[in-house]
Length: 330
Image (cartoon, rainbow, N blue to C red; front, side):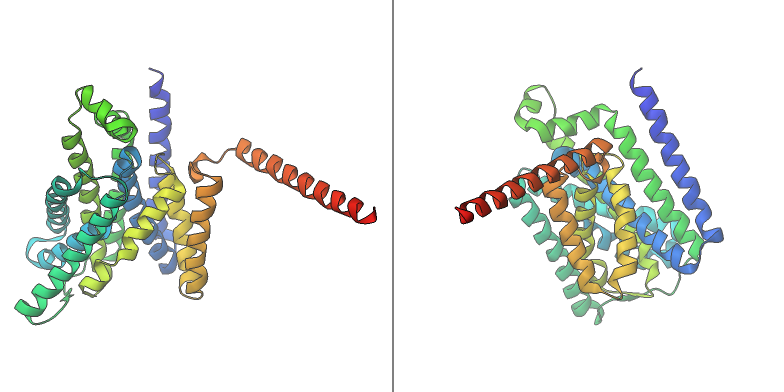
């Protein structure tokens, strides 16, 4: 019963933000809608990534692989099957790949798992490039059928809302508790009867389903896609950075960080690309050193604590300078 007010609060916040985003295309400019679309993309990607990786503490770098699989699936299936079927097929194929990949590498943890997922992403990218060069004689696909802007926007908005909604539900379900158990102590979770292997594969596949669906929806933003574009590792890296800086273990952290990063991306990346990359690195360093819980953990007490630390450091520095000056006079 105590959890019900929190659930109602989370759902009201989610529906309020969704309603505001739903109205945005009717009064926003093309630039604002484009920025909002990028923001929604990273809300869906980072929220679904944090759903598994934030709870289980597995650092997956395979997001760009699932995104690219969904994008290529949409490019191939959009004309014969239609928009909805292409999105569903992209999510389904990405899920299937994630099940196979997870069964092979989820017994590893830490750096080994991160490196292997990144290596498999590169393997998939180069395999598709090789197949297209050898079989089709070209690299890339031209999208001749593209839905309207509002259709794309509403689809990505729906995926973002669904990702946050699933996160709300999973955190209150036995499956979410099992993921937390895997992250806290996997061996102890096994002794309590949790099938950790199945739980990890299911969580990994759930993340891949959202990444594949988002990739399928976002592929139509380009009239031409190739492996270098849709399997870009930067998509996966930025998803991880957004989740970590926002707070991978929190519900609203990835959403908050996605908004911040989208604004930074649109305002700095085109005009000052180096400053944008420096900003990403600086935010990550500051989050790791001074805000390990992410942006979502910010409270008034946090600022007061920072103020006390700064005042203490200033007093210590002042006393040292005063002590040195006294020794000099002596």
